[in-house]
Length: 187
View (cartoon, rainbow, N blue to C red):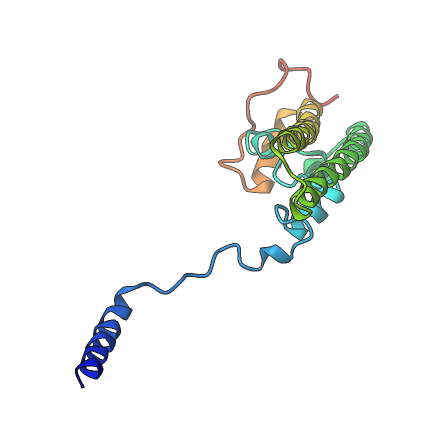
């Protein structure tokens, strides 16, 4: 009888303590293990494959350096000249070629790193090599997007830059400082 009282006492204590022990929380990563490349959401992969900016050019875009794709979208509102239109289309096509090629390289690098982990073949040397290669490729991809924003700004005049910022909903719509001295814009 003493044993059963002890067991009942322990059970009662366990019931009283149980609510104080937090339940295991679900990880915010739950479900991500099903991704083909765990570190890259499918939407991001699709954007990179399509040559989209994927956030790489935000520092330019939000500081008054328009992107070729967005300028093309606003052709009428910006009153682009035929020469500006032709030059913008050329820049956009070149940016797309470069960005898509680098995007494929970046995704392949991430997939290779993923495979090393998935197959249990990763070591510190492979890790350092893979991550350095991915970082270098990603840096080149970001540079590509930023470079075309830099070039694009030099093709627009102050009025067009102000209109671009206003139409895109940035700040007060004033043009950022010109990239070149006055009189060199709007070729």
